[in-house]
Each structure stands twice: as structure tokens, then as C-alpha cells.
Image 1 (cartoon, helix red, strand yellow):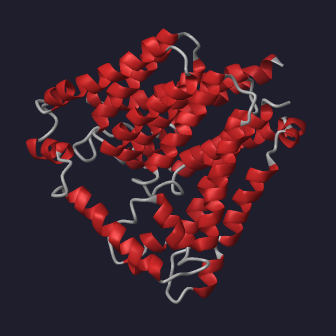
Image 2: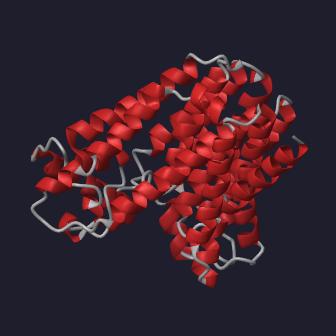
Length: 381
């Protein structure tokens, strides 16, 4: 038993620091070490443990969510049969790879003891924070002259920081540790300069406070102070040596004259034009990433992407997956604070979905869906 417990600690640490911190991506980008090797190792760890816990795995399986997710991916390729153009199947295979790996790790983490789960969530947050800190110290090259941490995309860094920041709030009961998590995550988020990440994080902190209905005298003032200190921080950031004046002005510009905002408005209009040509099965996975889309980036909105690529059938299943997950959270036997943490993280994914189209070409979404549903079901035993 001690051997299995040691195995769990090592596996949890490996997955937290090397997978969800984005460290494997950094190694691949800088040193050319194949990310597939590290991802396969993580999957092997997860699959081995699930096999070891097979009776628990069967008892803890939420049939509704598993059925919905598998139906979603069963119907997804149907659109390829009716496609009138060439679509690269590489995107579909990549999505299935992330789906399988995210599901395996999510189930593996959820079947552990609560103390191990909380240990993993906090380690993952530390892994994300370490990426930003190492960048600020100059150990990691800046990719876009913005702090990105181990990830190649600053928005990915912000997304993982926020998600694990919210999830790790259930790791400690002490309100001062919670305040420390909020403070550190908020601080690191500012250094990513991801506007959508910062906005969704602040809103979801308020959701967490409302859902937990505890420690309002500590946490709520902390959020208010955070909002007050944002202008002071931005003033400090504008004088940072590693940021050019043009970059700072671009990131602080929230008007429609900003290139990013204008791009999103254009993509929104284009997406609705495509949606008007109604298709039951959609245009096929990867359509908005292909030359057929006619623009250099996808929709910047996961809901529009699902409707366009997977059709009305896939979009309906996607909404059912989200709804089923939310119901499982609210009907679980978790403590009020744990449930508040999961609800806040769920709210973050929903809000971030209006600004990001990267849910299916990353691990975090599939991990969250399977982790939450198995974790909630596991607590009912």
C-alpha cells in the first residue's frame, strides 16, 4: 500500500508540473524533445492506476456524461462524409489524442483520495505560477514579448492559471491560504497580459464568494482591493523594461480600434454568415482551422466553433455535456466550499468559451469534464 501511495505522489507531481504547467510544450519548442513521449508517459501512469482501481472505476463511472461525450465524438466525423472540400484529418486525430489523454488523467485524479486530489490541484497551480516566475527572471525567452510561461500562447498560460487557481481554492480550509492563492494567481495573471483571462478570473472570484457564502469579510475585500490596485499595477507594467511601449498600448487598448477587438468582431460576423447555411452535421472538425475558412484564425469562440464544425447535433450534445456536468456538481455530496470551487471553475470555462476556440486542441477542457464528473460521483459512494 505504501508503494502505491508513493507511486501516486510521484505520478501526481509529474502530471501537475510537466503536463498542466505546459513544461512538456516548452521542452518541445526549445529543445525539440517530442511532446508525445511525455504525454504518452502521463497517459500510461493514468491508465495503469485506473486498471489498478478497476472496481472503483466501474462504480464511479457517471454513465450520462461518458455516454454524451462518446456520442459527441461518434457523430463528429459524420460531417466529413458530406464535405465538399478537403479537410486535414490531423486536427481530428489531435483532438482525439487530447480527449483520450485528458479523460485518462481526469479519471485518474478523481479516483484518488480527496487529500491527493487537493495536493494535485495545488501542485498544478504552482506549476503554472513557476512558468511565469521563471520567465520574469529571464530563464525562459519571451515568445510574443509578453510573459507566456511554459506555454507558447499567453492566453493558454492565463487560462491554466485561472482554472487551477479556482480549483485549488478547495485545497485549503484556512482562509488566509485561500487569500494567498487568490493574490498570487491574480498577480501572475497580470503578467500574462491576457485581457480575457483577467476579466473572467475576477468575475469567477465573485461567483466563488457568492457560492461559498463563507469568509466574506476576508475574501470579498481582497477582490475589491484587487480591483482598486489594477490601475496601479498597469502603471507599473507600462514602465517594465522587457515590454515595448507599442505592446503595452496594444494590451491596454480596449476600444474597437484595437486590432484584436476588430478581428473578433469580424470573425463573429463571418461565423454567423456561415451558420446561416444550416448543416445538421456541420462542416467537419478542423474546418475553421483550414484554408476553407478563409481567415488566418478560427472563431475565437468555442460555441460558434462547435456549431460550425459539428453542426446542430454536435452543438446540442456539447450543451448537454456542460449541463450534465453542472447538474452533477450541484447535486453532489461535496462540502459547500468544494462545490463553490468547482462551480467557479465551471463558470470560468463558460465565460472563457466566448473568447477562446482552443478547448479541443488542449488538455484542460477534457480533463475538467472527466475529473469533475468522476470526482462528484466518487463522493457519492
